[in-house]
Image (cartoon, rainbow over the protein chains, first blue to last red):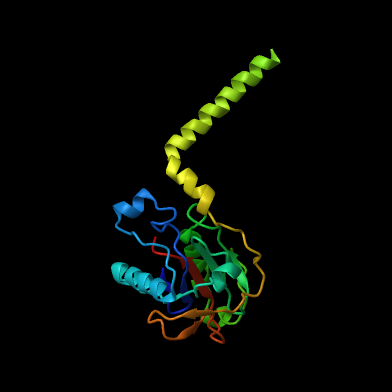
Length: 131
Length: 82
């Protein structure tokens, strides 16, 4: 998705507190996939795990880390995973449900596909209220 | 008659709950009760997206959550490795 639309849309991954750390609610899949981390207690730890993630998946989408008191996550209710689409005027035009069951990249992709069909002059600076 | 119906209904509920617990797993049920922090949040479609600051991957710089004055939409994706 990022590769396809990065020339017209900005992406920002927000790395937040762990969903299934081994000292809280670890899932069997964490063990199976060797993704076993404690809930970080310091910014350094959180940044370190975020870097592990980027390296492991060769993650090319821009990614930055929420501070330890989770200021951005608290405002956006992003835990454990969530999508938002912000239009060119800064308004929220899509707010996904929280994951895992509400996390639907295909809905975001559908929005992007519709957006990409618009001529560039039309799409810039205009709110696109498609959902 | 009503008592029988209630008993059967109650039994079915207990059976369904047992199947759910076995299927999901007791540790996941406990995890959900203790650690599930999913929230709807206050933001709604149509709201102005609040600004914020993040920390760069090298841990040294602040990065704005939202790019400004680009004339482009932005996708935010929240998540973690685990």
